[in-house]
Amino acid sequence: MATQLSSLKITNVVRQMNANAHEFRKNKLLKKLDEQISLATAQKNGELFTVKRLKNVKDENGNSTQIEVSKRVSQWFWTDNNKTFVQIRYGTRVLELQKGKNTIETASADDLIKTLGIVRTCVANGELDSVIEAASVKVRERFGK
Image (cartoon, rainbow, N blue to C red; front, side):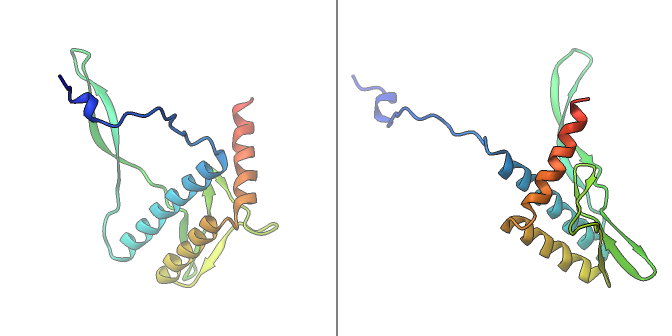
């Protein structure tokens, strides 16, 4: 008598977890850059940009359910004297892109979107790995206090 379970191919494999903290930090920054690009594009087109996340809430009986809520996205860019400036952030820290310099100047909203795309490519290619690592060390130091 054959069972349905015996018709499946069963193996013994250990699932690999994302243990590489370096890749985790890079992916975290890439996700935030994608949000900033979407936010800048929406503002350029006069649209409203929101990011949704799931939140657990309990009703009066104590039953937990998940609802979708909007997450606040703070923008990393601003306009001053007809120029747009952007600072790349890791958590609450502003990344120092060059020695003593942490802000990128762009001429317009179109340039802002292109600039954010360039920064995203640089992060994906590993050009800002040392900067991300330095910022993550500073962030972790605050938790040790």
